[in-house]
Length: 329
Image 1 (tube, rainbow, N blue to C red):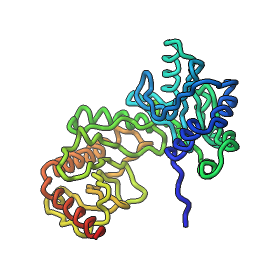
Image 2 (cartoon, rainbow, N blue to C red; image 1 turned 60 degrees about the horizontal axis):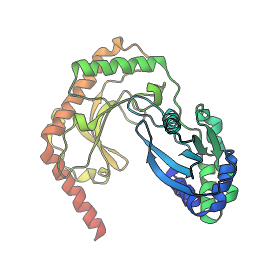
Image 3 (cartoon, rainbow, N blue to C red; image 1 turned 30 degrees about the vertical axis):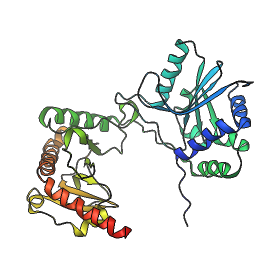
Image 4 (cartoon, rainbow, N blue to C red; image 1 turned 120 degrees about the vertical axis):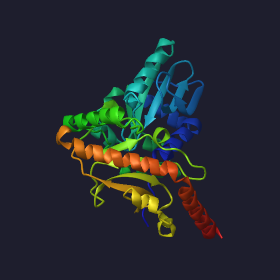
């Protein structure tokens, strides 16, 4: 049987529990970052808000009035970013600065496996780094097992390298959507600093601004794939999670076929799909404008279909609900 994956929420729980109940763990951790004696009251909190920007701090520890530690816990995930492209290291820096302006001594700490420090180009933006390996000796039982498995699981964090061709393509694409297809709202770039790496080839649409909601229908996702190695064609699609099992039971209406659409399974999800021309992010945008426009026009057709076919979507939702009830009986 395959070993269950360890997630950062699992290691968060281990560290929070030991900071609160294992006095030795807290003292040794403080020694690792050069704090010395930590006698006195200790306050431990999980998932607190950053002082200046959006997002949360994984673990926040206050050693009396001496110092506050803001800890970011990682196994192998890359750094998330805000709407304006500010990455996690920068947000921790801003929170530390804000605390110090208010008279509180503070430090940011990156807590992760050694492999993460080696692979991450921005780990040094934190004031201190503490490895999983360094704290493992202060843990025992199931907690030690969880951290050991997380160390074994750790891989190179995803920190994309900017590609100017890809970045220029997506910037021009976004401008076209804004000017000529205002009913379609693109999501922000998911990468810190607005970086677009070579392998970036998906346009994500903001569902709340692009698609209407239908009572009883799960919130979908919508995207346009410039090209897709796992599918016969590039496409624009609306994905609904958890409906993949029921695809064969769905009655596909003529209204979907009329716009060139069809249903396609994707794991546990289904895709409501229209095939589109392949786009190359490494080739000049201007030479692909006709194909880009054709893809966005398909996205508008799909958006309209979603808006005007609530009855079909609710009928599909009933099929999935009935299937879940049958499975439970």
